[in-house]
Image (cartoon, rainbow, N blue to C red):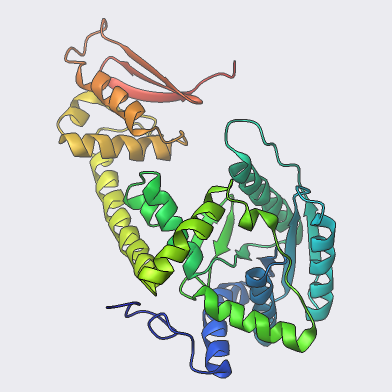
Length: 355
């Protein structure tokens, strides 16, 4: 039974054959990731929680950055959600001193309300803090320690939530957000290789990784998947992470093709100069599947929250029922912070005023 994939940089899901091979496997993608920063002569940030994965990313990135002449900054988000948070920040400060890289601690307040859940709220707070730190330090790139096992878990979570090809593509090696580029150089590296490097580093330096209690708290979705489902998959299908990660790459290619199709379809809908409206008659000439897909594309381009399948079906039904394009047939569809209208044969979108 196949347990890996042909693009596995460390040998079809198996650990590297020796410490030097493992070191090369960890360093090579970092050199590639930092090459853009070296070309632009700008510093780079690395997000460090204090756990084994992010600390190993910082350790190896610091060595690569020194060789390449790229200044490196450690960025730690202090959520204040656990009593150990101050100790974690202190650990990152000590790591910065050991690596001779400045460490910056950003304290954030996580708003548990708002209907997004504590995990999503903490993630939003992290990105906001990283963006502020990048602006003050002149960073354009931030390294994140996500690895192959994280990617595989993300695909499973997206699958269980009913995501389409774009969602199943999971995490990208490079993501632009709020003027920053977030780099995930280790998406093809298995967790075991990183943990082996962490054990060797701990043995040499007497270092211990921080332990985030949320990683073992099955009230959190990812922790529940990791603790309840992953062990069964490991036992029955060793190396399944490489297979699922390959699926993510294929899904990303499919999503890119679909995006190109939607872009071409939208260009044929007589869009306005700003893209905030299009011709209903032209839209109705598309097949049902392409009608739905171009609507998702349009809503996303206009910054609207992506509707659920049921909500999108409601909008599709209303648009398809507008046989008459006269003044007496109008549509108003309110969704989150936006309003979709159809007036005189033009479908348009606008922000809704806050209540």
